[in-house]
Length: 214
Image (cartoon, rainbow, N blue to C red; front, side, top):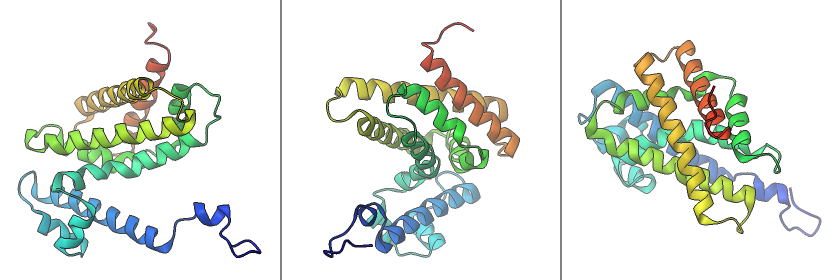
């Protein structure tokens, strides 16, 4: 929708264009194909070409989106992270940031939103050949958390605060994922994923309380 003068309105600026939507769909298709190849063939047994064929794209298109096979696998975490950050951005600006993070996780009522992230963790966690994929996934999450916190506080917030906050949240996320994996292994049932979600919520609660004894 445009203003009477013909210039774009705020709604126009906030609505993704068809090109942006197509790019997002292609990126998601590549990530889904990478996870499918990992699930079917196991670590080290598939290539960029295999992922491209699974996604129905060319090798060149793959590299337009991802620099490496590991980066494509790491992007599997994007869906869960995008949902969580969208809920975080809905929280009141004056709410303590860790309370907002916990509330955002609680708002993700469907535990299946965590399924791709959980499956990637279960498939890579015990295989050190894919350690780079796991590392890239966590680094990407860290960058996204820093960006969301910067949106909340503005440019005046210190870099140390942002990095310490993101690092703490990521460490709690890793702890929650590790405890879940030790208890559940490769179980991706709704009950198992609900347990993972609760671990993530509880970890944010511990961080928010300063790890007060329970």
